[in-house]
Image (cartoon, rainbow, N blue to C red):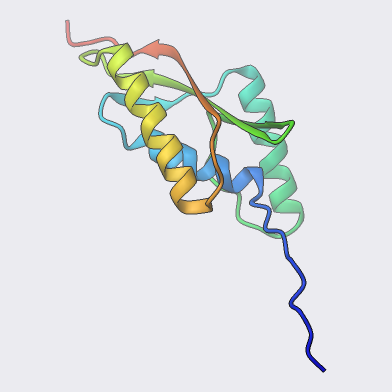
Amino acid sequence: MTGTVPETELVVADAVIASVAARAAALVPGVARLEPGVLGLVGHLARSGRQLWIGQEPAASAGVRVRRAGGLLDIRIDLALTASSNAVEVGRAVQRAVSGAVTESTSTAVDSVTVCVLHIEPGPP
């Protein structure tokens, strides 16, 4: 009897995508830290609580929101920049780094990465 292997679908959890995105964004020169806004903080707490409930270590993803709609994957990164950085250059570098890291690590295509600069660290007086 010859059988065929059934098609399987791999779904990468949003928490995993957010963790990969957070790590990639934090490594970009000029990023001081990821900084969740109020909605981002609420989402992070909900994800962390869910992960703890099922016995998983919460993934570091504060400041990252992942949204899937109609087959599209959108990622939003809220961050603070160092005083000496250029917001446009760092924002574009974060977009490239996040999109590349998520695609490479999860084989999930990223449709958009929105970078929101919420704070710029003050420089030395």
